[in-house]
Image (cartoon, rainbow, N blue to C red; front, side, top):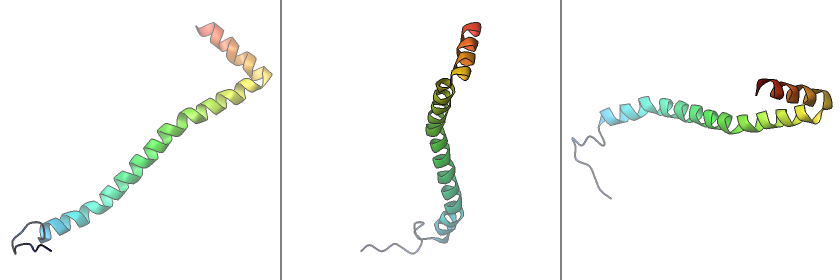
Length: 72
C-alpha cells in the first residue's frame, strides 16, 4: 500500500471538495445523456409503428398515398 505525502494534491481538501461539487453534476449529465440516447433510439421505432398503423387502415392509406403523389 502506498502512502501519499502530506502536501500531495491527490489527498488534499481541494480535490475532495471538487469531487463533492462535481458528483451531482456528473450524475445529472449521465441521466440526461441516457435519456437523450433513449429518445434518439425510440423515435424512429415510434414513427415507423405509427406509419405502419396508418397504412394498415384503408382510408388513411389512401390519404397518405394521395399526399405523397401531390408533393413529389
